[in-house]
Amino acid sequence: MNMPGTGSIGRTKPNRLETGLLAAALAVATAGCDSLLEVENPNNVVQQDLENAEAVTALVNGAVGLTSDAIGETALSSATLTDELLWTGSQNWAGELDRGTLTNPAGRSDDLTNWYAEAVWTAEEAVRMVTEVQGSQRDLMLANMYSGIMHMMIADNMEDFAFSDRTEVSAPVGEANMVSVYDTAIVRLETALGLASGAELQRIRALLARAHWGRALWPTMQADPTADPLVNDPDANAWAQAVLDEVAGDDWSFDITWTPNVGESPLGSWVNSRQEFVFGPDYVIIGVSGKAVAPDEDDADGDGDVGEAAISLLDPVDGIPDQALQETVTEFIEAFTYPSVSLVSERELHLILAEADLAAGSPLLAVDHINAVRALKGGHTPYDPGMDPVTPLEMLRHERRVNLFIMPSRRMWDMYRFGEESPQWGGNSDASVDPGQVWVIGQSERISNCYIVDPETCS
Image (tube, rainbow, N blue to C red; front, side, top):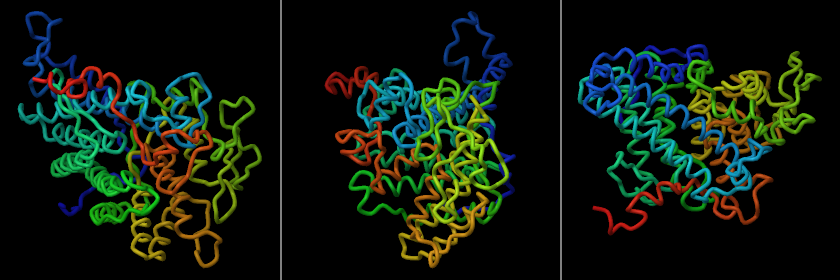
């Protein structure tokens, strides 16, 4: 492992990277690229016309945009599977996930396979092209960073995957080998770190903490997730601590954002606008329409604000609506079609270290990290395991639930490894019968990839 270094960073929420804005640059960069348009027939652009320093910037920005949308769709999908979102609409794929079904290749698996394939290919192509045309250091850094993010998302969420190159078909990695996709993610992120400066340093270090943490969790998910559920990985811990040493107390996070310039967030579109989903009743009080969260008109948390989202999930220590959850849900609703999605945050890094301390038999150290998170979310008293009627593990589970709310896959993993089930899951559903199950290769890939259809026909 390359040990984390130091650097100047943007630490607080106002300095979050607005990745959606980078995607908007795709059209601008393409329009301003003389060599791209100076061909005999502008309607017949070939590969060579794209391989120049100006065009690769557009390709990098395209990778950022595709990755952003893939992340948004993943957050929507995993939240629908868990108890975070309740399906209230008419989409068949959403009904399947709500009931705990993940293994229909023609269902949501097909959508995710295609989004992931498009995003990861574009990011990898950007890495190749920036390297070959000797593009800017920043383009090479972004290409590697978003390739790393996409490889991590695929490893997190797919049972198997084929990394094909346009018409050059590749065999699926294989279920037993999917952990290697984390290794690729880590290599890409480490390469990006060596090229980064400023705010990107912290983002990439935090992503490395998450990638190592996910890699350490992966074997648990392949066996019995409840048998040994806690992760304690030295690389994840080192990267997490390195970030916390620089951002502690800033409530730092790395978010994917959407704006009117680049389009709507998948979550905002489906939940707030179309109202095909509503946050689950274990988290919020649903209004009379059954399609939206009720407002808290009685100031149930006593913070003096009336009209925030009405929260049903109470803090275990104070017995009032959890402040982190209320803040997240209220901001989500107010953003309407443009709510952001967090990739990693200071709060999650503290919880990674708290979990490691519990796994190592050091509950008091874990409590320190838990209380650091409680201080960040505000409005709650510190947790005292000698006085409060909940264990450190129960507090860890609660703080992960409210501080990582709607983040891609987090609740899914926690429900599997801590033996929880959504009220909507059927007794024979994939999620109930096979805890740890994630999405399978989609139908489009299954009928077009010769290695899946008939390996003997592959040339």
